[in-house]
Length: 94
Image 1 (cartoon, rainbow, N blue to C red):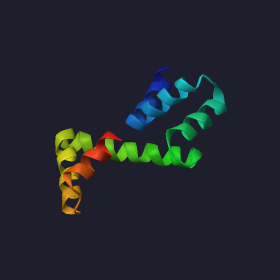
Image 2 (image 1 turned 90 degrees about the horizontal axis):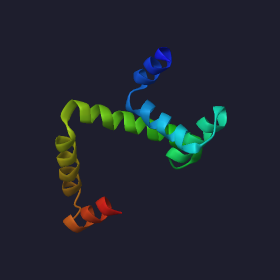
Image 3 (image 1 turned 45 degrees about the vertical axis):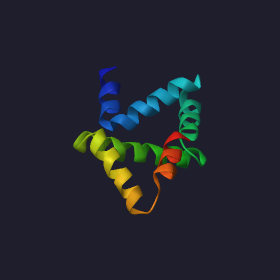
Image 4 (image 1 turned 120 degrees about the vertical axis):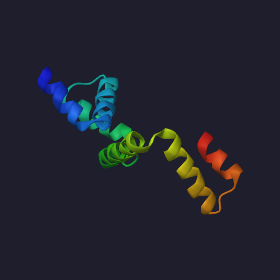
């Protein structure tokens, strides 16, 4: 068990997300992995793998800069691109 935990920990947050998704499938083995990956992102298994990669990038940024700094920077960038407050709020709540 310690070996398994150390391997999952090496994957970081994406590993935890994948383990949670696998557990939620109610399946076992390869079927659980493929179902979990397909459910995680658009476009099936490849989308799930891409989603895990994006989760890794976001979690690394949050660990380095903090949630508030990332959130503020994204909002400022959306304003810089010409989006209105209403458009940004609509994107946040959909």
